[in-house]
Figure: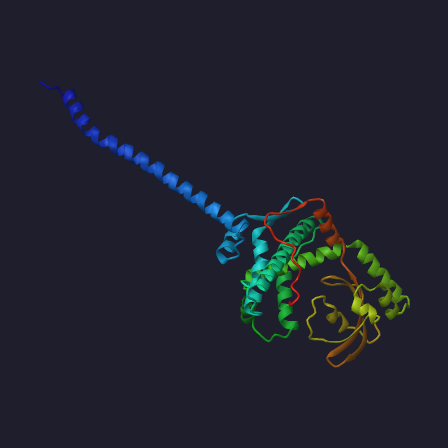
Length: 328
């Protein structure tokens, strides 16, 4: 008495009781999975946020995380200061102090030293970020070739007598950096050095005026005593004694002096921390007896101080202005 249509519907209705519970379960699985993923992501970012801004973790994992994620540690003149830049400097200092000077950061003195290093690292990261911003405005650029030349010169001038592979190992051993980290640090140093010298118009005019007076016959010792901003050299009328041609030369004036004759004065030298004019007094073999006049860079520091006074430097972590420990 059953038609084909009725039979078909009866068979299908028997199967639906198996389909609907399965469909209902699949829906719950999707909801639960999405909830677990959401909770995991929220927990991860919450934990990371706490580790960065509250606990201020400086571990390897946190450092690598900040290199992947755009995480700010401060802001200077509306420019974000990356947390990775701060950790790059701080972790280097911690590595050196703990491995080479055996500083125990769990001790009271070690804790003070750590706070001091945090302040140095944060200040440096802020200054480098601001310098990077100004460099774009001033059309100042440092290429990879400039960085490689600087590194090669470091190996050659300091006569380390090692291969580049060994030099890489030395960098890692002393600073805990990969070589890419080291090259990034060098690039920022070079960029900041060029920029600071370029924008310090007042200092440049002053040192060029001094050089003009010297070339007109003015006495070097008298000018050094009156104008130099190096207290020690000033008290000695600019005379800083003998230095070796192989000594560390971050400001580059030993190379200039090597091309001078006794009694000659150099041109303006853009050093790491200021402008220099140097005089070769005497050359004895590998030693050079020299005098110098030094004018410090001020414009960049003044601009940063003005930004801080105007509230345009904001720090997202709590770092105290700890003075340098007396025993260091």
